Length: 103
Image (cartoon, rainbow, N blue to C red; front, side, top):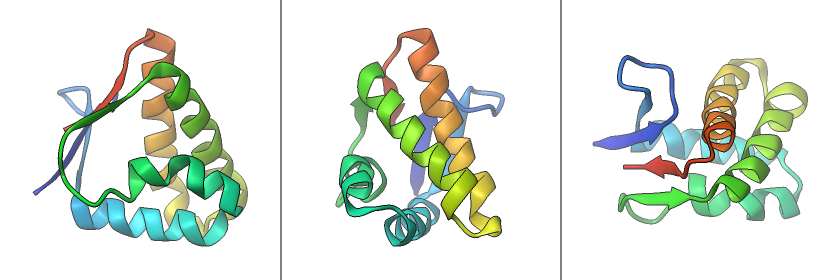
């Protein structure tokens, strides 16, 4: 089981990742981000359940900026592309004025 995240780049316009892969990314982000930034995004990347949820465009914009900064300035090289994938999906949701959906 895993997440299908809207505004991705696969043939269905999604990012598809296992719960474990997102959990691992969350651990990496939590390790490198300042506490304030991690607290601002933890509710998305470190969920206690797999229940579907959406993020408003305004919130997705904040998340995209934090995760993109981590991808470019803070994360180890092997995690940068994965973080950028999520940041760009959030940014596409913002640009479309649509909720960023996680199912």
